[in-house]
Image (cartoon, rainbow, N blue to C red; front, side, top):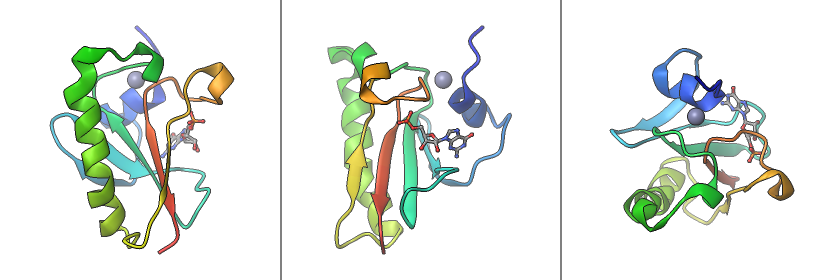
Length: 106
Ligand code: 5GP
Ligand code: ZN
């Protein structure tokens, strides 16, 4: 069994400030926000990083990216926002469960 903090958030084993959830993904507030709005959008299925994604993950990745402006607008970021997917140790990734950062100032 792996010990993944974001899988624990998916399972409800540790609390998170959720702003969106469906069968495939969940979005919640970053515990150490780097901007007034800082969300993390993650797949419910454990995928370590973007380096582990293949063409089979295209529907999931497309869904995440299409959901991003919806969540951003809901948080008051209709004027714009930043996104980031840190990938691998060399890419500054700290939590090895794929996540997309959404950052901005309403
Ligand atoms: P990374 O550097 O892997 O792209 O970013 C991981 C992010 O996850 C960091 O911004 C960090 O603040 C956030 N994070 C780490 N642990 C937790 C947690 O337990 N809950 C929440 N909500 N965010 C977390
Ligand atoms: Zn995980």
